[in-house]
Figure 1 (cartoon, helix red, strand yellow):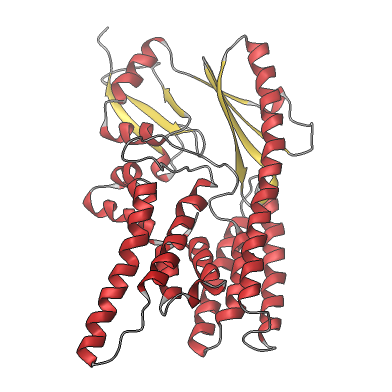
Figure 2: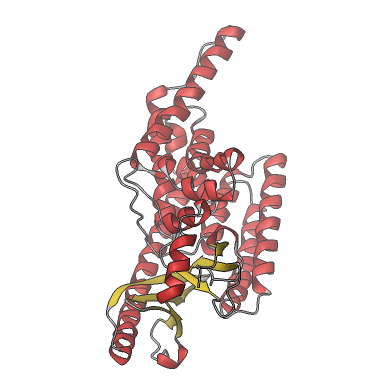
Length: 379
């Protein structure tokens, strides 16, 4: 998930009662809910392929989560001890309470990341296996709104906080406006989300005018977190329906083409619990299509086929896979696909590789695709 969602979960959890465990618990909850993404520092010691290799790695594992939950409150505890000793004041932190708050907040990060289709590797360093929840798109405006509105009402008691919340709302609104101007099928759902977002902002601001805490304090935060769980439950139900539709269409594809199915995935799309993106892998090809929950309109005519490389092309792909960039992509990719133009192979040929979850070979999209030059085989 995005760091705004992680921050809102940490802040809302604090306001649901964790902030009562110790002074500074709110700040610790927000930090612990985010700091797993400190693995982005690997970008400064390599390149984007280094980041792809290590992102959502050890810091998102069970071992890393426990370490984060312990390190953050220990650092704050020791820092406060140093400051209070220098100033001759008694310490305020209750370490046991701060530790408990940090552990809970830290655990929310890998769990939330598991809910989307990027995946996590919780068993590192013993196993690099990826796990995918496939429930929530990488950034979800409904999570922003549901948790953000409550957190805003419970914490905007000072002018500088009000300014901070206004800035966050403005940035999130601009992101939604930009996404709504796309021409792909998901844009309609984003436009609906933008309308709901706008109404929600207006309602939250109106409630704010009644006072800084017009709701029931920690009870409102608990309700917001419970609503998030219900939202995930609803998405899980929709995902189950969509997965059944994917399996049915995948079986039809395999039967028509006389192929053997290897695996399927049904993944969320932007701001819609009804439209899902499906990818199917058989022994000879990949297939990509969208399914609409409750609709039987998906057919073989709506399926895009991507054939796997064979023969000379497969040899070129094998050579490209020795490249460090390709190895980083393949270690991450769930549906790795390669494409090669071998019509006039003179000198070198370009092997285009991509993770079909996010893009296609030849379409640049950050770390999810790479083009690798390979020497042509001798005639």
